[in-house]
Amino acid sequence: MIYKIIDARYVRNYIIHVKFNDGLEGDVDLKNELYGEVFTPLKDLDQFKKFKVHSEFHTLVWENDADFAPEFLHSIVQIPA
Figure 1 (cartoon, rainbow, N blue to C red):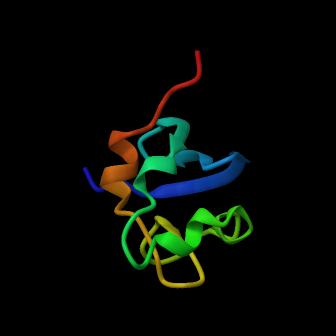
Figure 2 (cartoon, rainbow, N blue to C red):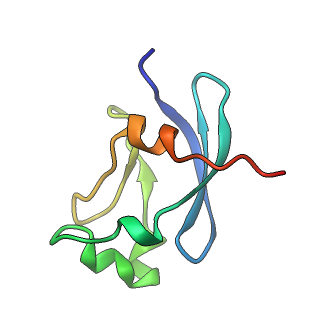
Figure 3 (spheres, rainbow, N blue to C red):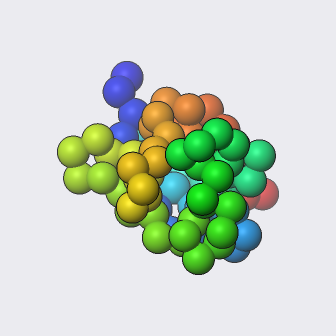
């Protein structure tokens, strides 16, 4: 299956709530994933909060061209209890 994010909203800190086309919905905590040249600027929460769901690639993207593969995000979703 090809995973696509169909909705996302900021929760708190480095956590984003995501909803996928297969019905999976939950939180992804990206705090420990923000390393490397393209992700380091996102450690600034003001920059981190400026994500959007890309209309063509169906994943989270930021103004500085940082993004995560939707398959990776799908694999780290934490479903709220």
